[in-house]
Image 1 (cartoon, rainbow, N blue to C red):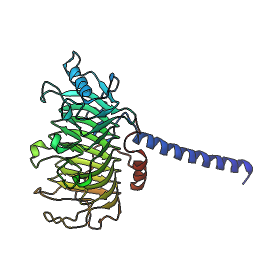
Image 2 (cartoon, helix red, strand yellow; image 1 turned 135 degrees about the vertical axis):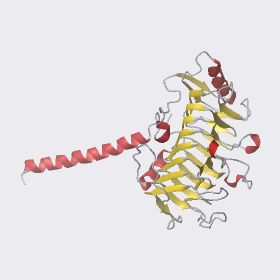
Image 3 (cartoon, one colour; image 1 turned 90 degrees about the horizontal axis):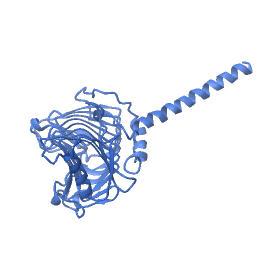
Image 4 (cartoon, rainbow, N blue to C red; image 1 turned 180 degrees about the vertical axis):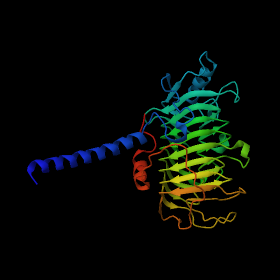
Length: 361
């Protein structure tokens, strides 16, 4: 081999390595895009929230609620609006026991095109939650929402309800006390999606130290079923169950990291279909048999009261100290969009590095 040939071979290898590295960075950039969601919230026209519109700043709950209400009563009620949260929102500085993203004329009227975003690391909801009611095209991002007591309202950190559509919940942190200080009903859910809401993406969040984590569908009544939910790159840690509980809906659980889930994780009931793709499960489930359904309490199954099972399609998941030898797919469901999923282990590392608040702004 002459020197010239050797030179071009080495040059070709260097270029190839550079391009591989570039592709990895580019893929990571797509996954971390803070302006556009992946998954179901990218469908049905997409989810842009208040992008390109008016920008306001609020440091109290009363200010946030006033901004939402005033825009709805204005001559331009659909004007895109971004509210940056610059302080701690509490019951004491709010006009109600929750911030409601709803049309003040009533829940039969839509409200749309709003983003509520924490500024830096300042956006905190302490003891007070958000309720999205017939809300269309809404982004909730970079907020810490914690210790929302059931005694002071719904007890839910974020409730998406009454036919809300195209909702993106991204890079937030949710937590309370595991087992609610020996009262499992002291807090309710962290993110609950209910009453015909659909096209929702929940991404890059941290869910920690909580008992009844979250649900998709609050009742076995099919007429109130939500649908079309994506959960990707979330960190689920030190939780008891409902990670999530799902009724009827089509759900995509992809590239999430589950760690130290005491009882059960993905609970699929009432004909729900869940694509469980490339997730990392570490110490998930008690391994006991559920007394109602007989399913082993672990990463995926049908657990507790509902009369019918749901279904799951399992691929590419990694199980560490988690009962899994009995798990097989019971449906071939996949969502109707493309998602360039990472391996389970790569997703775990990405979630450890990039989930929660203070990453995007």
